[in-house]
Each structure stands twice: as C-alpha cells, then as structure tokens.
Length: 203
Image (cartoon, rainbow, N blue to C red; front, side, top):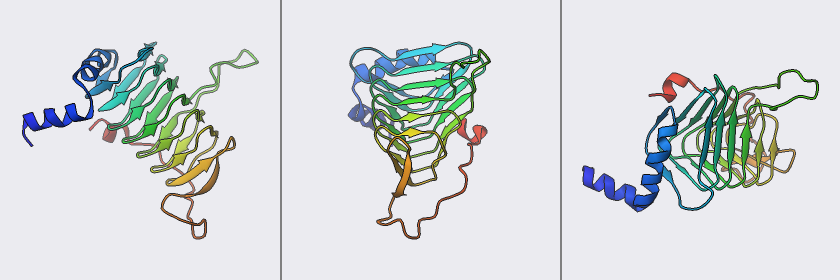
C-alpha cells in the first residue's frame, strides 16, 4: 500500500479536522499513535498529575475525560474508541486493549478515590482485554480484569473478573452466556484473566 493510498484510507475513516484535533490532543499524552477526535462539545479533557498516558491509534468522542495520578498509568490500545462522556481514572493502572468499543457515559476507574475512615483510598489495577464491547453507562470498578472478546451490557456495574468471551448484564454483571454460543451448556469459564505484558504493549 502506497503512502497516498494509506492517507486516503485514513481520511475515509475520519475527516481532516478530526485528525487535526487529534494531533493537538496527542501532545497531552506520554506516547501516542494516530489520534482522532470527533467533532462536538465539550472537548476531550486530559488531566495528568504525574503519571503516563499511552495511546495507540485511537478515536475519542466529545466529553471523554482521562485522568491519571502520580505514578499511575493509562494505556489505550490501537483501534479502540471511547464514546461520549466516558471517563477513565487511574491512580495505579487502567489498561484498555486493542479494538475495544466503549460506549457513552462509561466509567472505568481503579480507585475508590476516597475512604470514610480518612485512610488512603483503596486502589487496584483494571485490565480490559482486546475486542471488548462495553455498553452505555456501564461502570468498571477497581481490580477488575475483563477477558478478550467479552461483552459488558448497558448499565452493568462490574466488580469482579469477567472471563474471555463472556456476556454480562445487569447491575450485578452476571454472566449470561459466551460469545458465539447459543446456549450456556458446555460453556467454559476460565478461572482467571491474565494481566498484559507491558513490554509487548509498547512494541
């Protein structure tokens, strides 16, 4: 594929202004590939208190907010998009894999942000695998690992690990089945979801 054909392909996916907005936004990241910012208000907000934000080739819609605290890390893989008003907050780490589709008003955070006792808030890393779909207004809480290919239904509150390929719905984020299976019979639920190899992510 020639350079001209690559440019035409990119412009077929997003407009020139969207790429220009992305070029401005990528300056706020520690490291970034091609970033696209779709039109609309409010704009994408990035707050970095001394951590790192790594974004591969990604697309953002209006109102997205990314916030990372000192020593924290946000990673967003190539081909992933974050829709309107989605918020990602990392005190330790939030890893979002490649080709993920994250709907509007989703909240992903690895921290309680505050505690009733006055002690430091509890934090645990969040890992979201590749090709994960997250429905609107879902909430992904600290310590959760979501396996590749999983589907999180709209409004789900996810407080526990989700196996690869699982479909979870409801406020309890209960597993209702697995992607590609018409019944639950014979569904195999892996016991754990591994965290990513960060060196591989940077390749």
